[in-house]
Image (cartoon, rainbow, N blue to C red; front, side):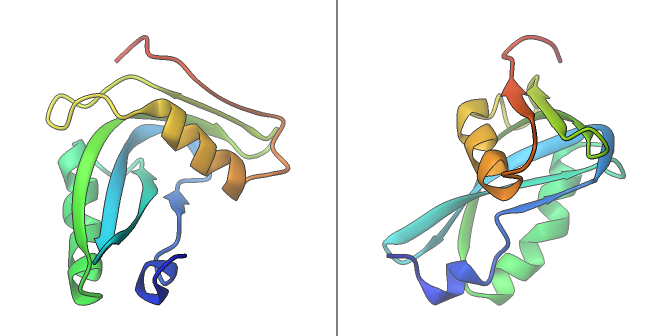
Length: 119
């Protein structure tokens, strides 16, 4: 059972096209938790993404940990996402968790995969 506060946070917020940095964040409300994926081309560093989302999480009273990062290649026109790479500051995200979240969020996509290769 999820907490109603966790339900207020969208599972995925990423740019619709391009290659960009992303982070995987574990958010907690008491004994409940979930993972969220955030990725934006405007972010020069993975930490910029975390800094951008942190005020909203704190406003909701949620605790959070950035558990890693990487890159996403997203093509919404053809319905594909590739997750790969790592963050120098946060380490490599567990891309298998990230891709499962993305698959649930984009059920009509034809390919959502990951690779632990590359930067």
